[in-house]
Amino acid sequence: MSDIKSRKDEEITGRIRFKPVKTEPDVVYEKLWQRVMNSDAIIMGVSSVWKYASIAASVALLVVSSFLYKMYLEPRPLAYLEVTSMTGSKTQVLLPDSTVVWLNGNSHIRYPEVFDSETRQIELTGEAFFDVTENKEKPFIVNLDGMHVRVLGTEFNIWADPDSDLIETTLVEGSVALYNDTNSSSLPDKILVPGEQALFDKQSGSIEVRPVRTSSYTSWMTGDFFFEKITFGEILRVLERSFSVKFHLKNEPIKDVFLTAQFTHKESLEEILSILQISMRYKFEIRDRDVYIR
Image (cartoon, rainbow, N blue to C red):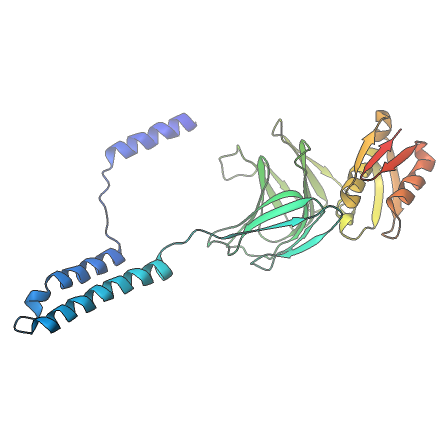
């Protein structure tokens, strides 16, 4: 398909002859310069002092016009801002359109100081919760590794750890459209409704959608956890993101065991693991930001 499009573009280019078009500033400069060059005709009979003063004034006007054009009219490249949330911290960011972003630890966003006239695009690495200001004329787009999420106004959570092969998009309110970067059409690969989560596989490009309890994936913001019929492996992933630690699981089969549990923000990671330990019967050891489970 791309080859056909490329050939058509070449055919069209071969048939069209482009003629340079003078912009409005170009026309203004040309008229001013002609005025400078024709100064002799304009000021015939005037003393040479006034003659050269008139020429100097015209040249000054040309220079000032050029400066003002470059300062106010010439397109400028977008200035970008970057925010990084350090390990163990959470950071709130207010975007130019009043969209609010909560960044989890070890996360990073990049966005323009002013959004352009057509879209609101940002880049994310790590995890963030978005409360997007509605604007039907300017879609909000989150660019990720191999895919992007497009919304008009909604609340959702994205987990995009660069060390993982998966990207999670969890929808709380509204709707979001997901596009694989290889998708060249205007139709999304998947559309989520509230209570759904999309898992994007970076290797295969596939997108799996499943129903979830959204609070299990947004609880990192408050520190309160409610896990309902969720695997132990999923619980560990949530705890990893909330406490900025890395789990090392030696007993692989236990990660597929389903659990239901509830914890508050007052409970430490050690207390949570001790409570889960009662039903799971494992041993754990915390070494700084590494947690070993046997």
